[in-house]
Amino acid sequence: MRPGAGGRHGRTPKYGEGHAHVPLREASIERLRKFLLPLELAEAELKAKPAAAVMIILRRGERGLEVLLGERRKREGDPWSGQIGLPGGRHHTEDGTMLATALRETREEVGIEIDGHVEVLGHMAPRAPGNKPEMLVVPYVALASGPIEANPGPEMTSTFWCALADLPATHGKSVVHTILGELSVPSYTYDGRLIWGFTYRILEELLVFVGLSA
Image (cartoon, rainbow, N blue to C red; front, side, top):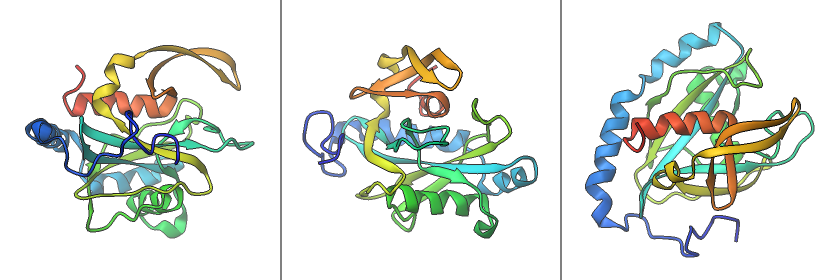
């Protein structure tokens, strides 16, 4: 079994369990929709800088909304080598649109087809990673309407679902090793995994969008 595949308590919950959380989940989703930008706005960013896209995939879980994350393989030259991150990558000319980039990367990295079972709600404001300031990344947000299974591709060692409600209590500072040396950075921790950098920044904003953080 992959790390995180059985949840925090060693059991994979059935989709839709935890009915007591249904009103809260739906309120969070409606709040999220109001914050997200329309899909067509992302395409204007293509002309501004070298572009990339990530996909934030959400599902309804026992403790409210969960987000799909993965641990990237350690690779020479990869600025996010070994980090916890979202499926995503650089825009290719043949993709056509930024959304197509996000869909392709999601399929390649976590084995998920964004189809009738997953609705793309919109996107968060594009932003540049701290270690790639020349690049503009568009974070898309999608919601699964039924059971969904992730399978790590060649660039991921594992994938896991993270309950958003568990993240705020783990917020803190961590020392990480980077090409610039040791840095103290803001972070979250989930099942012993350190979430920092670009993914941390996206999740920090997402928690505000769904009403789990001020």
